[in-house]
Image (spheres, rainbow, N blue to C red):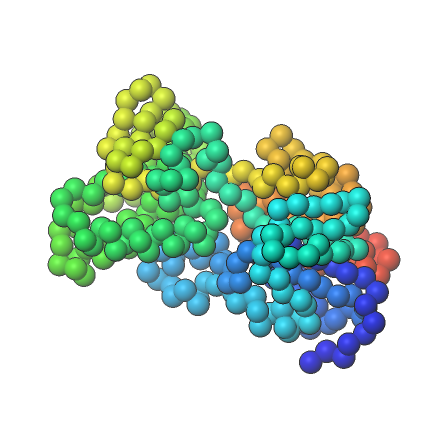
Length: 336
């Protein structure tokens, strides 16, 4: 239990991402006197994205790979608001979320993650299992498991996205579903997998050795790879390709490039071409002092892939810098 100090500054954390977990943990271990923290998060249980493939494959339980932000917020002496931000008023330093009065801040940190870049592809939101947001993906994933158990005949799954995330989810979902079918006494060979990559190869950001190894694993697992293939529409029973052809599918898993929420750009924060918040080496907004961002939602001068591991690495620097900003000390740079 922390001894309450008069509130000198209000630090608001938008999003319960990996970097903000570090801020809360450090505030609980070594509080900054007079710093009141408010966490606004859509998800009370935040998943560790690095463990997601293992959870999907059945290697971990839900509690193994999720952090309950309630006890963590109490440990940090922070206020916890279960809400999703839809507007930021930088001029008046107010944050708006449906069903709540405006929340004031002196310092602001944003670690909301990203969402799938599905806006321009009809049918993704309605028919596909998009990898992000993770909580919604997991809900749809559990429903898919029940659906495949209740069906007979060929069950075709199309994974869209040839990067590391698509490869991981193709392998982990197949592993789990094969086990589900075997445990149910059903024929596992009725499960057919195809991975579609827009690039000329899978895992195009990795070296040839990595790509060839996973191509070999896919061949061993009977997962078909189709490269240089773009999906233009998702329907309930098929995906439409750029050449007008289509592929039958009972389920589609969508693991393509990430997109940003729209409210940071609408608020006037400097953002890159994709809408991600531009930050300097200190993880501070290029356009507004006292506003920080980390993880997928942030765009560094030296861009990194949208991956939870970078939010984890940024956590200690982000924590140091919001504490430094609250106490008038010098910020320190993040080195990837």
